[in-house]
Length: 358
Image (cartoon, rainbow, N blue to C red; front, side, top):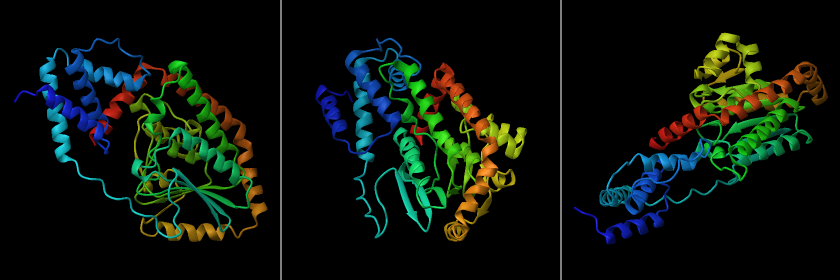
């Protein structure tokens, strides 16, 4: 059945009324079909390699080739109809339980001489946004000066942290890709420096899968306790990237060059037990008892003389601090160059496309 102009306009109104995000791949299809239906084949110059959003739109529109306007309009109406039929009203938000802190992508609490920094984006697998990088640095700065003995990082929900939110790389400033890459490199270097210089014991309670930056900085922690459900993944090469978080230095020291290469170069995902055997994880606990066992142990650690704890840690850490800062600077410069490469831009676009299908 041929789609009339009235059908097409009705579909456009329906799209504007949608409350639920249809996903990146569907958005691109809708965009491409709309442009094809109203303007015909793609007539725009190809965007730059780091302008990821507009490049994805251009690719989707160009892929339609010489598809007639009428056919594009029919396909647009059909796609909107199928999505509308499949959609369901959103469930009401579940209220927070008594004593539970709700809201905010990062939750910071201090209790029993333990400061806890919690990734709090469970719906996004605790992916780290640009603002979260800044908030974590502020939290670490405050924790370094409070009366806590330990500082703990953990995640809310099924994931510990899925690494960078890839939208961090899609907002291109007036200075273009070069400015974006430079700004991101400065932010990352400052972020990792905070962990290198932190004066108190750092503990990671890895409650689920960990990816990217949330894995690489673990080499800067003093204790890493993991659920048996946790995994550790650093997929740099598939994304056209290179290691960060001083992992190019800390991982070979912990697990040996070949095992580190498997993770950092070839993207091998480790189970919690494998990560423990290779020195990345201190101890693995059954998921059902992780919280009880770990927090009981951590509270016991806070009873130790705090000045002795800090002094012992400083003796252990001070010798390698200058080297870590140098490694961090080198890694961030390498990443700045990778972010500007066509290889990286293409790999990230492929990843985002696959993610949209999940």
